[in-house]
Image (cartoon, rainbow, N blue to C red; front, top):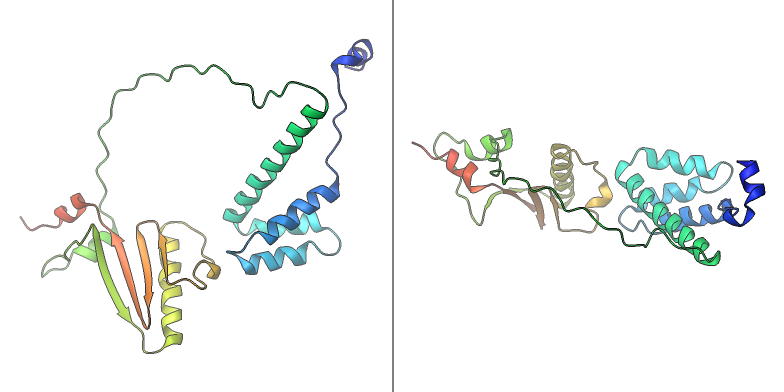
Length: 213
């Protein structure tokens, strides 16, 4: 490689590493952007202070896969911006924006849509021995009322936490702070004073499966 560079110096460019201060600024901007997760933003801010901020920043995100994914997207976008700027400054063709001929996708035979599967949640909602719950606008509604505001807050947090667990989503308290409703997958939790409404979307085919013969 060294011989090739010496023989053809015009074919090569030196690519400088991205300065630590620039990457540190990216991390600071990411932490400041987490309006929906103020607790984590505060932890990231603390991690960026003192020694080893890069490692400490990664350690905080390690426990929050959803935020780590958001950081990776932001970092990739910033790296792409730097790459485009470097190519432009060097007067080089940008391979990242050149159109490429795309091969026609293979023709696939249409497959019938898979029938929804009956789950435990469906049985609990619809499998009452004296008759199933009516389906209104494709949803089943359940309501529970707490005796006071504090218990109503706790109730809503538990319902949202359980909905997150059911769908394999990491629960954070910041998901519901300052909000009266939240949808997680096919479950929507709505706070109404001391009452909490839980709406669950149920496919019509599932609902019909519980119709007595």
